[in-house]
Image (tube, rainbow, N blue to C red):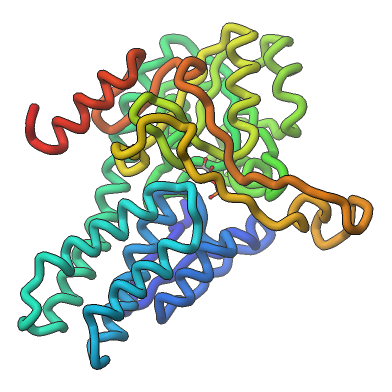
Length: 349
Ligand code: MRU
């Protein structure tokens, strides 16, 4: 399994996911601006990976500011620039808040090099915890299957989208190793093809049987009983259990309901937005028209056509059969289950 990111010699190495599957090249980020650029360009993508990359970007920003006249204003600017990269995945904001809380807890008169060291430890902890959360999610998720199934997934919620095994693909990896997965159907995931370029590639690396389909084939695949479950990742889950994920996820969930197929979501707690009641309020990123009107640099639509290109959609909790977290498997009523987890985190339960 190729590492999505590596903190090496005080720089961040990011596997350039825009080049996959044709070449595996790492980008060396020596400053936070390059990290911000990589997140914007989707060179690093997937909610947990964006969060961890931003945390390391924050460390690079802090180190740069050590010799500046005003570290304290500068670091807020670094945080804001990183926040502005992508709006939907809440892991980004969660990771930046974690980094800022280290800054805010520190004594303003203490040595800044010590603070940068603490920030580096925090970023490493974010990545390490993500790996551990992925592992637990995989173990819990595999328990959902009693007999071998074929399963459909959308976008890429694999190791490329996290610092570890992946969320949805982590569950698939574990279930496959237990003999519970026959085959994975990967939606290609228009317009940027995270399903075909990344998920199909990731699974093939490990000899997990995978069949690529275009997004508009999912309904027919279900109708023909070729899949018995769906599993996806998430970019933000609200208190009522609504799930924002890659555009097209909502359609897959509606299709799964029509065909009586369970629709599972796998996500760590860093993907939960405890400040938001429902998915209605989740900011949905809209991306450039060129992603839809062009394919591999070739125009596929009349020049100047109006395009709508939301990068995510929201699946209402009523369509979600279960949410797999590192705390276990959540079922309806999600608002009660999510509240319990929030209290556990706060140490109330
Ligand atoms: O635009 P992307 O590629 O960052 O979108 C990624 C997704 O939608 C993933 O499914 C989600 O982040 C979960 S990753 C574990």
